[in-house]
Length: 66
Image (cartoon, rainbow, N blue to C red):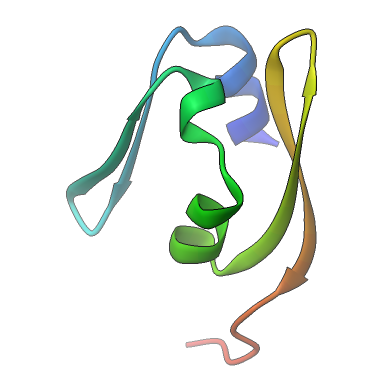
């Protein structure tokens, strides 16, 4: 939910993983199925409401938790 609020109220997002910037840009440029797959390990569907990206998790890709 926090990520959706950030996308709605931010001009630019920065996605980091292990201290490195993975992706940076406008929310509609940053949100992608590949981002959620690679960083969050989920399959997600991306949709837009008034040009603001939202996502719906579909499934967890890595079923093992550490």
